[in-house]
Image (tube, rainbow, N blue to C red; front, side):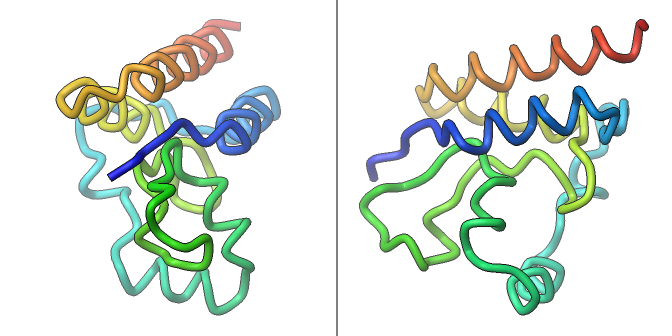
Length: 117
């Protein structure tokens, strides 16, 4: 598996955070993480490129149109979730994807900076 950082997703998350489109939640990502049905519903109305922007990693060994290519989700297709960033950071660290771990950490810090304004 060749998972790499999805730079477009990082830029998209930064933009959403700047626009205030985030939730400062913590510890309950499993409650906010879109399930398969929500993902499929989103894909029925959006292109795969839009879906990809909600994932910090992508497995380049899979085709660009494969939903499974996109890893480390951080939002609910509407807002960035702090707990999604925390989960992505933790999973990336466990799996040795340090560039994704750093990106998630930087996004979390940007979100926290916006919260403190």
